[in-house]
Amino acid sequence: MSRDFKTRILLVKLSSFGDVIHALPTLEALRALYPQGHITWLVEDSFAALLAGHPALDEVWPIPRLRFSRQMLGREAAALAGTARRLRSRPFDVVVDLQGLLKSAIWVALARSPRRIGFDGTREGSYLVLTEKLPRYDPDRHAVLRYLDAARYLGAPEAAPRFRLEHLLTGRGNPLGEKPARPYVVLHPGARWATKLWPATSWARLAEWLAKQDLAVVLTGSLADRPLAAAVAGASQASVIDLAGRTTLSELAAVLRGAALAVTTDTGPMHLAAALGTPVAALFGPTAPWRTGPFGEGHETVRLGLDCSPCFRRHCPNPRCLTELPVEMVMAACEKMLLSCRDTPVNIQILPGR
Image (cartoon, one colour):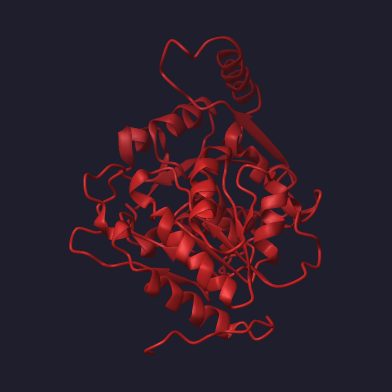
């Protein structure tokens, strides 16, 4: 019997979509370190579906998003209280906080573990509840690698970051069919920040160019993205397949996995596509691709690189970094990536003047 048979590990990464995906290699590293241990992940219920059924996890504990307001009543308050009681009654040997915020520090403190591990100097005083503090992290280092430092600190073996997402591909499958009639490119125009959005007319022009390459064009997004997707489809002279707000997480994963290429804003599905092994052309403006860009080889980031970028602002009176991003720059990135896809039978038309 392995000496770690009874080791109980709690991984605290509550949000968001992309950050949870970034933490998956840390989960894998912890599993390699504790092959017989019991690993639990505490996550906000909005992102629990990303983890449910993951082969490296023993349990997923979903909780409502912690909000300090009068609205934190009823079911949400009861669910939070239930999780607090659960933490108090089932102590963990090791707690790893990858969130580094007050909302995670509360749960880390409630866990009553003798080893509470995270980074020093994190925001909102969250580091104060830790018993073991890693040095302050370099914010310009990619999040995947930063998170892995916590597992390395515990003694996890050096290995390439690993993403396993097969558990997301066991549902109803690809809405486009397991063998689509022709290769397709996914366009994901939505994002939570207004400053991360590229104009709908630019997406429409890109869709028209892709259609001329004998590629099908598929729009994805959440329910909230449906008006934007409709605007893109309406402005495009090309026929597009609009799946925005019409897919489950499992179906979205299948669509992204089957794509020849995904073109996205800086948003959660960008990270999902990259983790699934799909080449990503990511449009960046107010944020830094070296911090949170698509992780791995074979991806492209497209940005103007203005002096004011990255500013990390959710609102800007003149978000030139994306509103002025030329369609031709994105076309060129797509062209480069499609030409490198040797197994994808596409008919590429070289851009004029290149």
